[in-house]
Image (cartoon, rainbow, N blue to C red):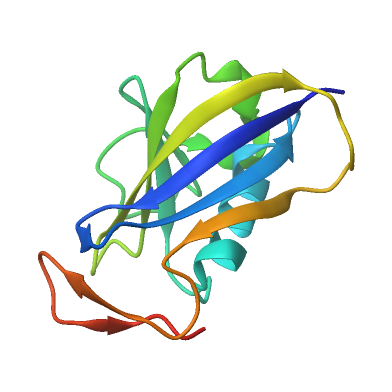
Amino acid sequence: MPDIRLRIELLDTDPLVWRRVVVPEQINLHRLHELIQDVMGWGDCHLYEFECNGRFYGEPDEWSDRPIALARNAKLKSLAARAFHYLYDFGDGWEHRTVIEATGLKETNPCPRLIDVGQPGNKRIRLRRRAALDITR
């Protein structure tokens, strides 16, 4: 099964915080959410959603004001877009842009993996919309 290389960018940061990952093309969006949580250092304690071509994917709940497709049932390779958005924590609104950089890569490992980072480690970043955030995790 071929791999896909993604670049995940945390929007509204200066400098830009990003991660590059390689995932199996069959990964579902819920598993991609878990991977984003891991590589960005988030705590996975808030709701999330993906948006692609006007369609939303996540975990449906009673507070949603729009149709949300179940993320577990949506495969990354079926999105048919070169980029899409991921929103984590509806209260704080951590917006990410995910760009599909390459598809059809030779599979070298069946597990998703982090291959490159921008702004890693013990850095302080300035958020354009918020106060400074310590990304030491």
